[in-house]
Amino acid sequence: MKILITNDDGFDKLGIRLLAEWAKTIGEVTVIAPKVEQSAKSHAIEIRNPIEVKKVHITDGVTAYSMSSTPADCIRFGLTTLKEKFDLVLSGINCGLNVGVDIVYSGTIGAIFEAARLGVPAIGFSSFPNTLEAAASYLGQVYDYIVKNNLFAKNPIYNVNIPEKAQGIRMTYQGSPYFSDEFEKIDGQENMYMPAGVPIEDVCPDDLDRDTVAIHKGYISVTPLISTRTNMQVVEEFKTKD
Picture 1 (cartoon, rainbow, N blue to C red):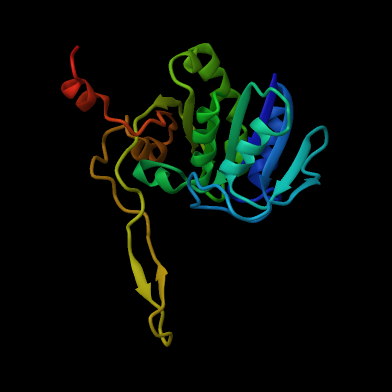
Picture 2: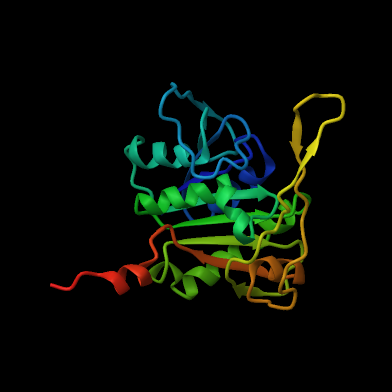
């Protein structure tokens, strides 16, 4: 199996090295990851400026490149330009959770949406900032869960969040906003503001089927995502009948 890996924290970060080291146990690994941090870049791509792709070292036994663009572009380049057929895309391990509706901003998740667009199954992995090594110890368990339950036959992409100490795996759905949407005025700087969002309490704190709740209750959260933006229920309701 050939595996393509990216992240949004940057090619030289701990999370992607841990992910690549584990992925070597199940396949042949290629890493293409951003040259600099691309957090909150969502599914953005570069369409106007030249992009640098440079070979780098991440860990032994892994072919790796840094790319001066976004996670989605890393996947786009790997799947269209390297002239290799990849069987699986992995993104992460992100330094910070990707849960609730805030995943729309995530570069980690943008990468797996790009994989889905190009027809390759994908998993995005995230954890708390100080628990990446602990999270890496559960990667094999999560992958076995996905394979055992034939999840890629049911859906192409999954968002996985891993706590430091997991008491099990739960299939979850996307919860409410995880961060508040606030900006704070910067003292002494006219017309300047700083994003100041902080984690907020979930509106359904006892619903373990929500990713925002399950992760804080000690469960590995596995959320099936879809990339379509079309509400087919409305389309079906108004479909013209010949």
